[in-house]
Image (cartoon, rainbow, N blue to C red):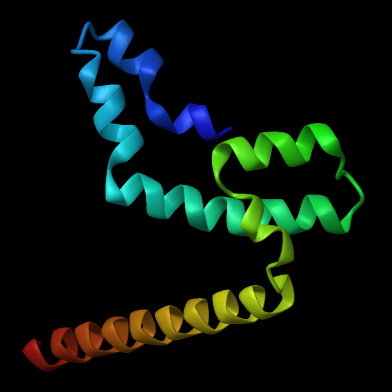
Amino acid sequence: MRDRFNGEEIFERLEMPQDLTEYVKTSELQRNFRSLLFMRIVPVLKDIGLWGPRITKAFEDMGVLSYADTDLDSEMANDEAAAEALDQARMAHVTAVASEADGAQ
């Protein structure tokens, strides 16, 4: 899954420079995305019992083994709070735009 986000197949198919792959692998945005992704995946795999030497080695090689002890309940609560805040901001914007449209008529 980690490698899917590198875009190698796309760059190859579009005959784009291969150094784009290295750029994607090292870009701050991609590093942050992978970090957030594996922060959720690693503890879940450990929690449901899909943890063994092979998985441990793979996560160690990817540099995400430290997420094994992440408090997933806390992270999920943070995600829910962020989603709720975004929903409230979106609704406030929708309401404001609707009010402006009603006032313009």
